Image (tube, rainbow, N blue to C red; front, side, top):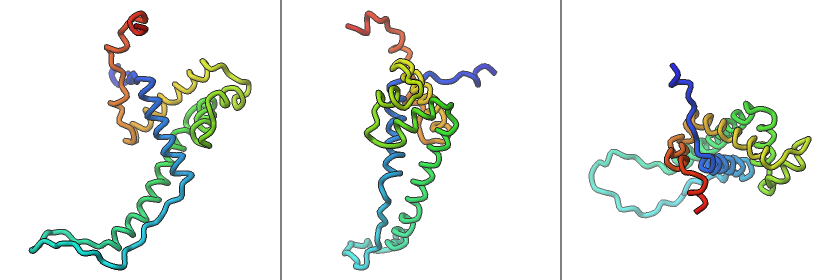
Length: 167
Protein backbone atom coordinates (compact mmCIF):
# COMPACT_ATOMS: atom_id res chain seq x y z
CA UNK A 1 0.00 0.00 0.00
CA UNK A 2 2.78 2.46 0.93
CA UNK A 3 4.69 1.68 -2.27
CA UNK A 4 1.92 3.21 -4.39
CA UNK A 5 2.16 6.53 -2.52
CA UNK A 6 5.92 7.01 -2.91
CA UNK A 7 6.70 9.60 -5.56
CA UNK A 8 9.96 9.28 -7.48
CA UNK A 9 12.91 11.49 -6.57
CA UNK A 10 13.91 13.39 -9.70
CA UNK A 11 17.24 15.00 -10.50
CA UNK A 12 16.57 18.74 -10.44
CA UNK A 13 18.90 19.67 -13.31
CA UNK A 14 17.80 16.86 -15.61
CA UNK A 15 14.17 17.65 -14.89
CA UNK A 16 14.71 21.35 -15.55
CA UNK A 17 16.43 20.61 -18.88
CA UNK A 18 13.65 18.22 -19.94
CA UNK A 19 10.82 20.58 -19.00
CA UNK A 20 12.53 23.57 -20.60
CA UNK A 21 12.87 21.46 -23.76
CA UNK A 22 9.16 20.62 -23.67
CA UNK A 23 8.30 24.29 -23.17
CA UNK A 24 10.59 25.29 -26.05
CA UNK A 25 8.76 22.79 -28.26
CA UNK A 26 5.46 24.30 -27.09
CA UNK A 27 6.63 27.84 -27.93
CA UNK A 28 7.86 26.73 -31.36
CA UNK A 29 4.58 24.99 -32.13
CA UNK A 30 2.64 28.08 -31.05
CA UNK A 31 4.72 30.65 -32.92
CA UNK A 32 5.93 28.93 -36.08
CA UNK A 33 3.27 28.29 -38.68
CA UNK A 34 2.92 24.84 -40.18
CA UNK A 35 4.11 24.56 -43.75
CA UNK A 36 2.05 22.13 -45.75
CA UNK A 37 3.76 19.77 -48.09
CA UNK A 38 2.68 19.67 -51.68
CA UNK A 39 2.31 16.54 -53.76
CA UNK A 40 4.88 15.99 -56.47
CA UNK A 41 3.36 16.13 -59.89
CA UNK A 42 6.33 14.75 -61.76
CA UNK A 43 7.66 11.37 -60.90
CA UNK A 44 11.30 10.65 -60.28
CA UNK A 45 13.10 7.59 -61.46
CA UNK A 46 13.37 4.84 -58.90
CA UNK A 47 14.70 1.43 -59.55
CA UNK A 48 11.85 -0.93 -58.80
CA UNK A 49 12.63 -4.45 -57.64
CA UNK A 50 11.15 -7.14 -59.81
CA UNK A 51 8.35 -9.08 -58.25
CA UNK A 52 5.79 -8.30 -55.60
CA UNK A 53 7.16 -6.37 -52.59
CA UNK A 54 3.92 -6.08 -50.63
CA UNK A 55 4.09 -2.30 -50.44
CA UNK A 56 2.25 0.38 -52.29
CA UNK A 57 3.46 3.90 -52.76
CA UNK A 58 1.13 6.81 -53.06
CA UNK A 59 2.99 10.06 -52.51
CA UNK A 60 -0.21 12.11 -52.76
CA UNK A 61 -1.83 10.10 -49.96
CA UNK A 62 1.31 10.34 -47.79
CA UNK A 63 1.38 14.10 -48.32
CA UNK A 64 -2.31 14.46 -47.49
CA UNK A 65 -1.96 12.37 -44.34
CA UNK A 66 1.06 14.42 -43.23
CA UNK A 67 -0.78 17.70 -43.89
CA UNK A 68 -3.70 16.57 -41.71
CA UNK A 69 -1.88 14.68 -38.95
CA UNK A 70 0.97 17.07 -38.18
CA UNK A 71 -1.14 20.16 -37.38
CA UNK A 72 -3.47 17.98 -35.32
CA UNK A 73 -0.52 16.51 -33.39
CA UNK A 74 0.94 19.97 -32.79
CA UNK A 75 -2.39 21.30 -31.54
CA UNK A 76 -2.88 18.27 -29.28
CA UNK A 77 0.62 18.71 -27.79
CA UNK A 78 -0.01 22.40 -27.06
CA UNK A 79 -3.41 21.62 -25.54
CA UNK A 80 -1.87 18.97 -23.25
CA UNK A 81 0.81 21.38 -22.04
CA UNK A 82 -1.81 24.08 -21.39
CA UNK A 83 -3.99 21.64 -19.42
CA UNK A 84 -1.02 20.55 -17.30
CA UNK A 85 -0.07 24.17 -16.55
CA UNK A 86 -3.68 25.01 -15.74
CA UNK A 87 -3.62 22.44 -12.90
CA UNK A 88 -0.64 24.08 -11.15
CA UNK A 89 -1.20 26.43 -8.22
CA UNK A 90 -1.40 30.18 -8.87
CA UNK A 91 2.26 31.10 -8.33
CA UNK A 92 3.57 28.12 -10.30
CA UNK A 93 1.12 28.80 -13.14
CA UNK A 94 2.14 32.46 -13.29
CA UNK A 95 5.82 31.56 -13.34
CA UNK A 96 5.49 28.92 -16.08
CA UNK A 97 3.21 31.02 -18.28
CA UNK A 98 5.26 34.20 -18.06
CA UNK A 99 8.71 32.62 -18.24
CA UNK A 100 8.27 29.63 -20.53
CA UNK A 101 5.04 29.90 -22.50
CA UNK A 102 5.09 33.45 -23.81
CA UNK A 103 8.14 35.13 -25.34
CA UNK A 104 11.70 33.93 -25.72
CA UNK A 105 13.30 37.02 -24.22
CA UNK A 106 11.78 36.79 -20.72
CA UNK A 107 14.43 36.04 -18.12
CA UNK A 108 14.13 34.71 -14.58
CA UNK A 109 15.02 38.02 -12.92
CA UNK A 110 12.25 39.80 -14.86
CA UNK A 111 9.71 37.30 -13.59
CA UNK A 112 10.68 37.32 -9.91
CA UNK A 113 11.28 41.09 -9.76
CA UNK A 114 8.60 42.54 -12.02
CA UNK A 115 5.86 40.01 -12.70
CA UNK A 116 5.33 38.51 -9.25
CA UNK A 117 3.31 40.91 -7.11
CA UNK A 118 4.80 41.32 -4.54
CA UNK A 119 8.26 40.46 -5.90
CA UNK A 120 9.91 37.32 -4.56
CA UNK A 121 13.54 36.51 -3.88
CA UNK A 122 15.60 34.41 -6.26
CA UNK A 123 15.62 31.50 -3.78
CA UNK A 124 11.83 31.56 -3.47
CA UNK A 125 11.55 31.73 -7.26
CA UNK A 126 13.78 28.65 -7.59
CA UNK A 127 11.62 26.76 -5.05
CA UNK A 128 8.45 27.64 -6.94
CA UNK A 129 10.01 26.68 -10.28
CA UNK A 130 11.35 23.39 -8.91
CA UNK A 131 7.91 22.43 -7.58
CA UNK A 132 6.23 23.36 -10.85
CA UNK A 133 8.77 21.40 -12.91
CA UNK A 134 8.33 18.35 -10.68
CA UNK A 135 4.56 18.41 -11.16
CA UNK A 136 4.88 19.00 -14.91
CA UNK A 137 7.38 16.15 -15.26
CA UNK A 138 5.06 13.72 -13.47
CA UNK A 139 2.12 14.83 -15.61
CA UNK A 140 4.07 14.55 -18.88
CA UNK A 141 5.27 11.14 -17.80
CA UNK A 142 1.70 10.01 -17.08
CA UNK A 143 0.73 11.12 -20.61
CA UNK A 144 3.68 9.25 -22.11
CA UNK A 145 5.38 12.41 -23.37
CA UNK A 146 8.42 12.25 -21.08
CA UNK A 147 10.34 9.13 -19.97
CA UNK A 148 10.70 9.46 -16.20
CA UNK A 149 13.52 6.90 -16.01
CA UNK A 150 15.97 9.43 -17.49
CA UNK A 151 15.19 11.97 -14.75
CA UNK A 152 15.59 9.83 -11.64
CA UNK A 153 18.40 10.73 -9.25
CA UNK A 154 21.34 8.43 -8.79
CA UNK A 155 21.62 7.60 -5.11
CA UNK A 156 25.42 7.53 -5.35
CA UNK A 157 25.66 11.12 -6.56
CA UNK A 158 23.45 12.59 -3.87
CA UNK A 159 25.16 10.67 -1.11
CA UNK A 160 28.40 12.63 -1.45
CA UNK A 161 29.44 15.10 1.20
CA UNK A 162 29.69 18.82 0.48
CA UNK A 163 33.45 18.74 0.87
CA UNK A 164 33.71 16.07 -1.85
CA UNK A 165 31.57 18.11 -4.26
CA UNK A 166 33.82 21.15 -4.06
CA UNK A 167 37.04 19.37 -4.91
